[in-house]
Length: 477
Image (spheres, rainbow, N blue to C red):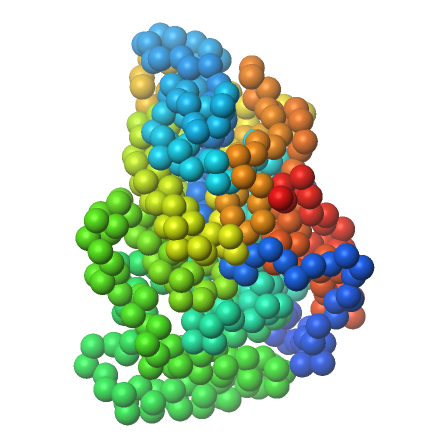
């Protein structure tokens, strides 16, 4: 599995896993009751809500939150000389620099933690969708069952904070671009059931459209459609092969959407009611407005919100060329909105119980594909001599040193964890953190025990593989 899977095989296997979860391994209600023990020392948690700010496409750590020696572009320069293509700038933390263009986030780091030592998994030939699947579910694909997204685990274990607001909301991800089917594979509640899956808002500027009937459809017609939906469930493969639990889960997901449609909380989705001064700060594009919507939904009692810059091959953070020029725009999109989100939630008193996590599937480097000790097939043609600025920037996929940010929800303030080398390869050299540690730290902050599990295919399925993930306690206040 480590070295032989290509994209088509990955898609086929994850599709098969979904069918397996529907038929042979369909969970029964008794199996989906809590199987966790009351561990000694387990607390009620320091957070109630999680906001995941997902930098889809591979955010280079040396170009963002872990800058190295800056080298300006010169035609004919050696590519191996380049560690960072942006100047370092000071943050509010003494001696800690960010990359130029992230000034606003740097000014709020006294409210959060910087992790400079996340290490992504070795899974052979690097595919964005496979590493994103791994980050969001904590399981390496393919799996024999449909692994739940982190947001689905949280929705299932804690339920909605506000019964009207969907417990798991995904903002900004479309499935009409790029590797659509591969991305769908982990944007799911898996075997936990549809009611714990994501409520999708592809475009935050049209969030209100997500919670009301289409134009021209009155309430009675919508109710008739709701009944038709129930009939379709009964006559679909789910109705024929699925368990009673799965059928009821589908119906409950529709009922939750209907309840939101008729609630006063639906106004949170209408961004036009935001004060103009605030709206203008967030309005840097779909991601920025997604941060604004996340703020409003947090204030209305959302449980888990994901806001993504969206993965589309060769766009956004996926800098196979023009890495430097591309990141100028990406930083413009994220810097102001993320900083404002932290400040707004802090001002309203919600940050103390809201855990904000900023992450990406892996980092990037000019010269190394994978990691020095586990190089994989080269996917980017990078000349040794740079004669064109399009080659100036971090283009290859690098898995041995990635940056993350955490704010609120019991996380230490003004803290830096881990370290990468100052010279190429800029890999992790202190306090490496892997995905099971990240997941378990988040679950710990929420008060979800590490042995939470469900019996699937006659074996326990944990929040982290084999239940071995351990919280990184040094990150917690």
